[in-house]
Length: 143
Image (cartoon, rainbow, N blue to C red; front, side, top):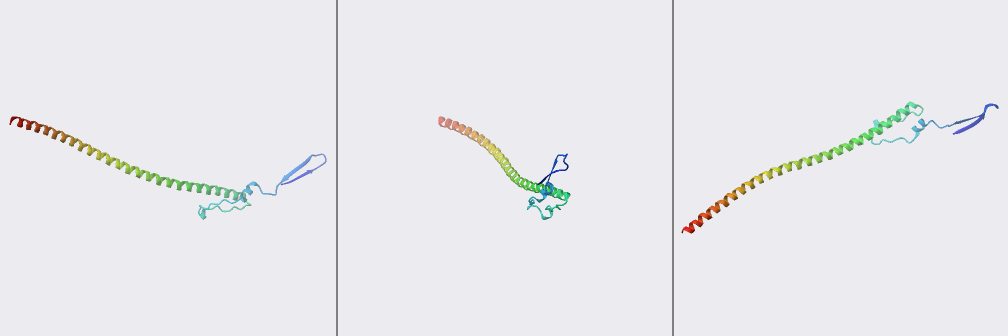
């Protein structure tokens, strides 16, 4: 920054002028370290601006922002695809568990029915056995 103080005439106050030989901040931004987009295809990489044209620098900045956004979306898509695979695996596991549950319910129903039949058969056989004992005791008592 260069500063100069001058008096234009004796009856007027001093005038101070300050200026810089550096380019404006907009142009300076273009000289900052260039962003890198290693994951971006070569054809999509931002093209360096013509630093003497403000519009070129603006287009470059917009392109860099879009490249960042694209990169972020690309990573989000990859994450979402991984998450989808995880959820699909969980769903498959849940479906297997559900099928196993249905099979167990059916097996329980069959075993319950079989148990009911066995209890009925046991009662009938116990009743027959009691009847045979009574008949046998009557025969032994009458003989």
